[in-house]
Image (cartoon, rainbow, N blue to C red):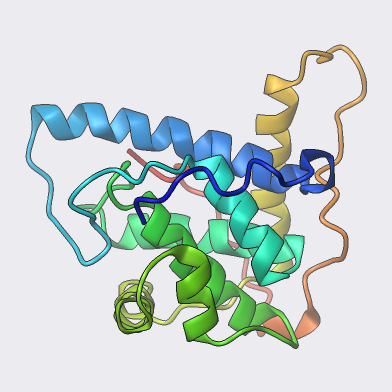
Length: 207
């Protein structure tokens, strides 16, 4: 995990906007929870590292995108899973010590659920800079932490897309122009939607 910025050579204009703004959002959440962590104790989980990884959240996500070849939609679904995880595990907020492991695990689970073709855990472990044994453990802990609630309805998907789009629009230097697109590339696959129950999007990646 403690590796240098290995994705500086990624052509950033080819990186989906969802990655750029998801990384920005997670960076703010992690920093906020880092501050809270200094003021009060928090539970330690298998996702926590002993030190902060030297690679930034943005570069880490770009690395995953570059080498894992998962669809942009996978990153939206991974975001849904992260939000569900922290809502179901409020004693384990996202911070700088666990965000990278949570990201590689959530993207792995999302790719397995979303995409027709995906790499195995050994490959994802190499991309994420951790061992295969550790990633296997993280995946299992993440699934139990989610209560195996992997279904994402079209309503859920578009709600989270809308939130990220608002995030992007708020940071855009041209806010007076038309709201930009996330460029997801393709819609959520039908097989991910086993029911159409409406659900409200609660506090995003709550502190």
